[in-house]
Amino acid sequence: MVTTISPDFVARPRPAEPELGALWDAAAAVTDPELPVLTIADLGMLRGVRIEDDGTAVVQLTPTYSGCPAVEALRADIVAALAAVGRPARVEVVLAPAWTTDWMSGAGRAKLEAYGIAPPRPRADGGPVALGLGVRCPRCRSLHTRELSRFGSTSCKALWQCQACGEPFDRFKEL
Image 1: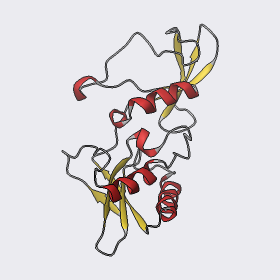
Image 2: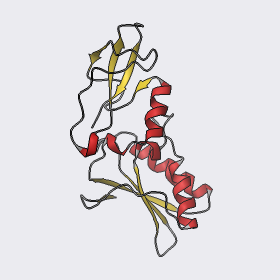
Image 3: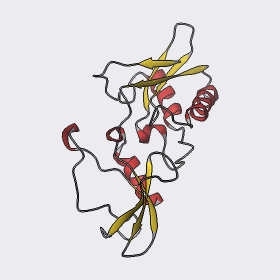
Image 4: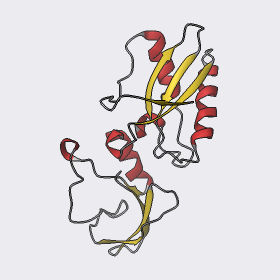
């Protein structure tokens, strides 16, 4: 099932209600199959959790792009995570508004860099992505880098190389 959320929808924080908070935590711990260092909460893909009248938990998930091949794996992992805490669940895929790297948490950006992937730069005040001096190498921190290929191992990454240390690295694209 695909759902649309109004354009003014913003990421919700963890629900304060204990039962919803526990369900949020279970879903939030699910890792991205393409970037196992990040959870769906780190990526900002977890959009909401609610309980239906029949007791089913509904988790709203916005994929990083509409054709993301990981959606079915994420759906299965979320259903399994909620089953592990005793709650039947289903996942609603939310395509509007479209996911943006602005939804990625600061912790998620730090995890990416520690994993060897240059994180996307945050936008200032939701405006255009600021142009910087370059992309910082996640290994040696040099700004003396260059893009080798706009297309990396997944659609959301590009392949770069550091000219200071010589190491290639992925860069998560700003979207």
